[in-house]
Length: 403
Image 1 (cartoon, rainbow, N blue to C red):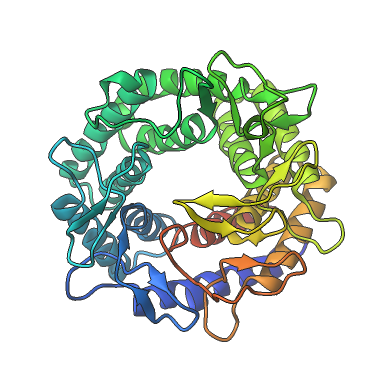
Image 2 (image 1 turned 135 degrees about the vertical axis):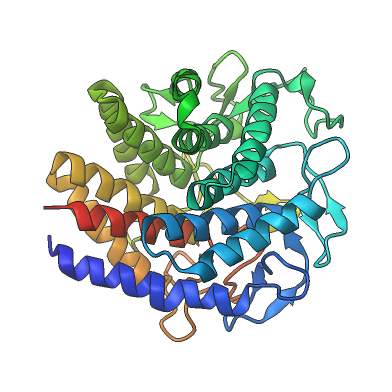
């Protein structure tokens, strides 16, 4: 492995392409926070702000400040996003909105608590950068709120009707324990005096995640029944999102390293290999966004009633990022060649097809063949300064440590 060559590639992509793109185009100098809906050139095509993106951007720039480069402009951007969230993005019941206008007027609120989870990690990371305990206390408050809702959804202060009839088909989703695992790990790093508390929660979340793995299918499922059952007659239970599984694999593997838990590391390796085999396109390369285990047609994957994925052939930016992180992390720890091969293969594909060498940052979506879709989107309510920059920064740290 040519570590020096990869290190140069990743550093250039982060510091010469992605960071300048968001600092130049994403900062809202008038109202604060990040303008996340950007076209290829960085022009704002919608002033609607995603609350997710405020938290994700705040965490990303504070984390890069902490891990790689103590540039004050990173902290200023991070604080701007946090201040915007604190002032405009929290409803009267304590739950956070999903989208707001540019100036901060509420637009939409959703039942799930992902806006809160990214707000938590942003406050925790900013505290690590500044030592200002106000941000740690804010992170702790919202962490305890979200974890309480996770354990007992009936205590959620946001009272609204579920979009599905749970009495008919009550399902659990992998995203919930998976995201909470990462959030809890970051909270443990920030709130070091309560590390035992977070360790216990992580143990519970690992057990919850394991329920989604079905060895007879060699797959970590996206959804299972409330009693951990697998329903082969429901496509919602046959769906695998390889990117989620791969992301989960490195969350688990990282925890296995911290705990010196070889069994957990082996489980994480199994998840990665299963997911990359399911998700990798052997004809054109790249990781698919979504797959059906029975290879049944997926006619449309919808998000917010707008067709986001016309079929199951789409290649999305973030699964590639997660595959790069996971394969390098496991290779660094094990030195097993199969993970180096996956790291090199996924890195080559992602940088060739997603990286925009002319305008900076990465494209959001490709066709199966690797062509950029017509939107040329660099940011929207779901893509922002997070997955790519997290991947680049984590890989830079790991590459520096590989002997």
